[in-house]
Length: 480
Ligand SMILES: [Zn+2]
Image (cartoon, rainbow, N blue to C red; front, side, top):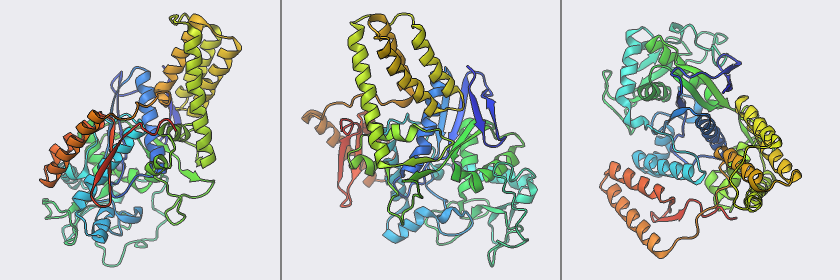
C-alpha cells in the first residue's frame, strides 16, 4: 500500500504513514447544530467518509471523531465578533439553545444515515467537554501562550507562538498594529483570539477558574481531538473555509499546550459551487441534503454527485449533474445484474488480465491522494472491458466482485428495503413516543439511546413545525 495524501500544511503529497502501524486516528470538523447542513458541508463530510472507507478497505483500523459544535461558534465565521450562532437563533425564536442543539444534532445524524455515511466512532458535543477545554486553557496559561484579562476573559497570545500562520500563510503580520482590535477590546495583539469568553447575556454558561463564561469555538476541536485521539492525530480534515482562522488556531492551541506536533496530515476539501456560482442563502440556492431528498433525488445519486470529483477541486453542483449521477447509479446497478446473470452461479475465478488492469486503475487513483474521479474512470472501464470481453462464468463473477469492492467506497449499488409493514410502523411509533417522554423529562441520555435505536432500524425522524414527529425509512427514496 502506497497511499499518498496531499498535506495542506507541508504543501506536498506524502506517503501516508500512521504513527502507530495499522491504526489511523482521524478528526473532522463537524456541523454547528443551529440549522440543517447544506450540500457544501456534506461535500466535506462525504470526502471524510470516502477517506475512511478507503483506509479501511486498505486494511487500516480507523478511529474517527467528528465534533458537534453546540456552543461558541460565533456568527459570520468571525470568532471575535458577533453572537453565538446557536444563541442568536435561540433568541430570535425564543427557543432553548439546548433544545435547538439537540434537535439539529438529530437532524444531522439522520442525514448521515440517509446518505450512507459511516457513523464516526465518536461525535463529541462541545457542551459535554468543557472540563477538557478548561484544562487545555490552563496549560496554555501555564506555558505563557495565553493571558487572563482584567475582566477575566482568557485570550491566546498569537505572538507567543512562532509557527502561527504556517498552515494558512496568513500570519497577520501585514496588519497595522491595533488595526483590527475592536473598541474597548482588552487584547494585546489584534491577532489574539478568545479561549474563554465572558458575556452575562450568553444563555449557556459554565463555571471556570476565571468565573462563569463559555469556551471559544477553536478550543473545542483541539481539546476534544486530543482528549479522544491523543496528543498527535494522524489526519485532520475540514472544508477549506476551516483553514483560517479555525485550524490555524487549533494548531496554535494544541501545540502550544503540549509542545508536540498536533496533526501529521492536514486534508482540506475545496468549495462547492452551484451552477458555476456562489452558494448562499441570499441567492436561494443553499440546498440542504434533506431538501434534495424531499425533491425526490435518491440519496445514492446525491452521494455519487458529491463524490465524483477530486476533493481538491471546486465541485460545480447542478441539477443536470445530479440527474446524470442518478443515471450513472442505474448503469452500475444494471451492470451488476448483468454480471450476476452472466456468472450462471459460478464462483469468481482468477482475474483475467483486463480485469486486473481496471482494478489497478481504480486502486492507483485512490492511492493518489484519493482521486475519486480517476477511480471512477477505473469503475467505468470495468463496465466497458467486461462487455467487450463478453465476460461469462467465473470471469463475470470476478467482475461483479470487483464492482462490489469499488462500491465499498461509493456505496450506491445497494437497493433500499421495501416499504414498511404495519408491525414495523407500530414498533417505530412506540419508540418515538418513549423518546418524546424522555425529552420532556430532559433525560437526554435516554433520548439519545432511543434515537440510536431508531437509527439502527433505518428510520429517520422528521420534526414538524407543530411539534409532531413523523418518520420515514432512511432508504425509502432510493428507487426514484
Ligand atoms: Zn474544528
